[in-house]
Length: 86
Image 1 (cartoon, one colour):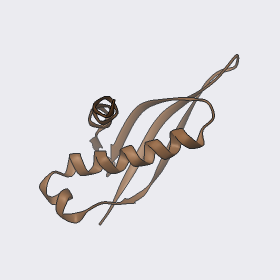
Image 2 (cartoon, rainbow, N blue to C red):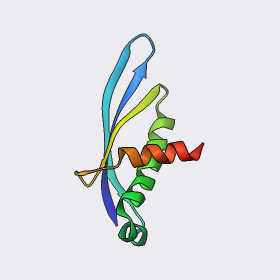
Image 3 (cartoon, helix red, strand yellow):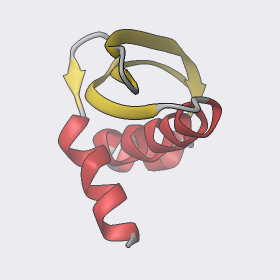
């Protein structure tokens, strides 16, 4: 099953300020997990996408908003995943 995820973020350039950016795409989710708790499964997949985005960007990245399927805001859930990882 595919869901659409949009990640709104800022990249910070030393001495030059920041730039607002959007990354979006369709991502595969586990259908069973999505049926049980769609926000949790979408957050798990969004975190993987954010990790890739952060690795690929040489500048500091600030995640502003993460939405799946155009209307579901999962920003706080994804941030919780980053906090619980430490």
